Image 1 (cartoon, rainbow, N blue to C red):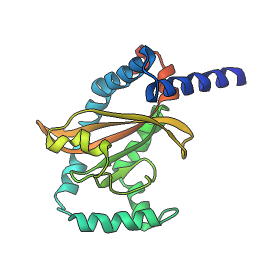
Image 2 (cartoon, helix red, strand yellow; image 1 turned 180 degrees about the horizontal axis):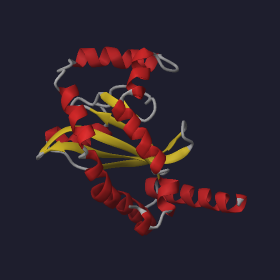
Image 3 (cartoon, rainbow, N blue to C red; image 1 turned 45 degrees about the vertical axis):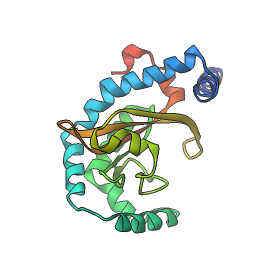
Length: 198
């Protein structure tokens, strides 16, 4: 059993290293596999009413960037959680994200953000509240057009795994309202046969 776990971990590390560093057909296949999964499974997930309604409600608050940055500063200064973070973790949308994470072990973290990149719901506390200056928001929101974005694979210290952040737009018609971001554990994801990714 230990030998199988070690083998799986080594394979995951090797694949992740290929993705981030060395051009190879394996790396292309890993990126293609996660992109295909995003297009076939994650985009429909982001279209769920619970996410669309939550983003629309948050966007309607018309928060200023100054307000968002004040929350972001406080969020980052809290080592654990405070009332604001606990309330976000307890909201129904966060609970829904946690249920998805528990169902799919290769999805390590998920967070829903509004049209400015501010958190609405999280499966666990993120390192910051505002994602608006990061590629995982900007590329997927795409100035309101919306498109799938698969970020580089990076070693995540908190989960001790190689994660690729996969961002999909939350759409209403052809307009992006916000973004749903998934941290995909490439070690676990790579080992799952394509026909089981359903």
